[in-house]
Length: 221
Image (cartoon, rainbow, N blue to C red; front, top):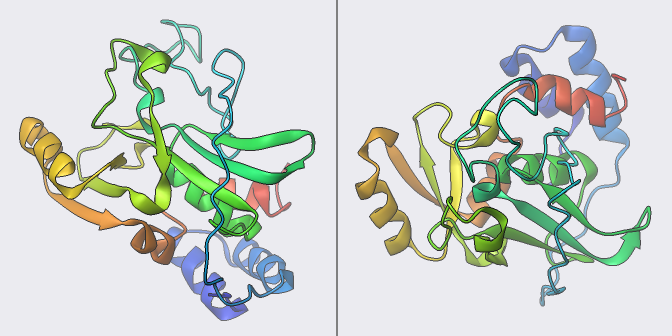
């Protein structure tokens, strides 16, 4: 649903943005065209190839593939850590020479779509990696994509269990998500969410959210 100026200012204020930044971003959002009603039939556009070696997230600019130890900001990550939440917006018509927009977290994709007004099933199809089928030891070759609208999502309160501290991973069914949660009790409190709920909650919490929203709104360089 189209977000008016007051709603955006309230949201950013809650996130800790300054009054000036909140009002500027709200003005940007107000200028965006209000979306039309959802179509009766959602388009399904095939997923595109993934640029694992050189690709970066369109929202936060982090690598899509887990970097080698010390190769990114001198940090070391568990093998296969980034790939487990890879997400993609496959486009019906290329944009800026791209057939797809790539993300290293589900929250990054949802937030990017929120700020730019992209809609799943309308000129694009949103995809997520199936965490239930993913083997971190195999990395990119183990990633299997599924339409985001068909997935269920596990939220876990533990910090840092997925990239950008977004706390969300995708599964093919509620049963698969519950099995994963039982096998990983250190996730703390968990919730099972559907795709529409993620869209309704957007922008989703993740690291550096306010600055990233402001950057993509053209307010920060």
